[in-house]
Length: 237
Image (cartoon, rainbow, N blue to C red; front, side):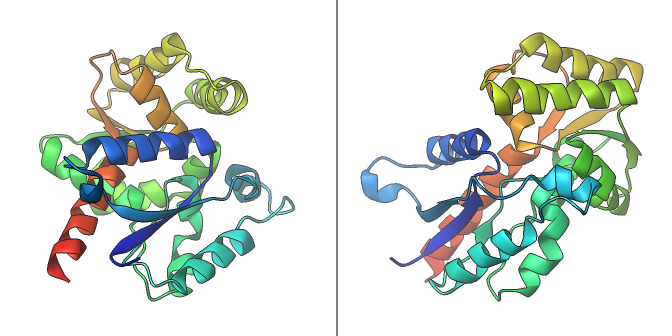
C-alpha cells in the first residue's frame, strides 16, 4: 500500500473509534477509492498514561508505544497520528525513534485557536490529571501568547469522573456533567475558549455537543490536519 499513514490508537478504544468516525465522515469521498489509506494500531493494552505520569512506580506506557512506532516505521508510512493527548507526554522520545513525522495534537489545537478565536486571551484546559500535570498544553498555550486557565480541584474531579467512570468504564456520556464542567470553565473561571484536552472529552463533545460554550476539540483538529496532510501527500507523489 502506498501513500498511507499509521494511527497509534487504542488509548482508549472508544476515543479512537470517534477519531476514525470523524476522519471517514470528513474525508471528501464519492467512491471507495476516495477514502484515505491508513493502518490502525488499536493497542488497547498500553498501560494507563495518567497513572504512570502521576506515579512512576506504575507500568510505563513508553516501551509499548516505542514498539508500535518502530514496527510501523518499517512499513514506511507518510506520517503518524497519536489520538491520545496524554500520550504526548512521550512525544519527543517517540519522534526521536523514527524519521517519520508524528502530528502533535496539542500543538495543532493551540494553533487553531489563533485562527478560529483570534481575540481570545484566556485559554481554559480540561483534561486528565496526567495531561494537566505534565504541562504539554501549558507550554503550547503560553508559547502562542495565551494565558492558561487551569480547572479547580472540583472541576478536575468532575472531569476525571466523566472521562474514567462515564466514558471509559461505562461507555456513556453524562451530558449534564459535561455541560456543567464547561459552564464552570467559561462562566466561573472566565475562559475565552476551552480546550478539550482528552480524546474522551472529544467523545463527550460528539455525543453532547448541544451547548453554546466555546470549545476547541483537539481530536477534531487532529482529524482535519490528518486529512489535509494525507491529501497533500497523495496528490504530490
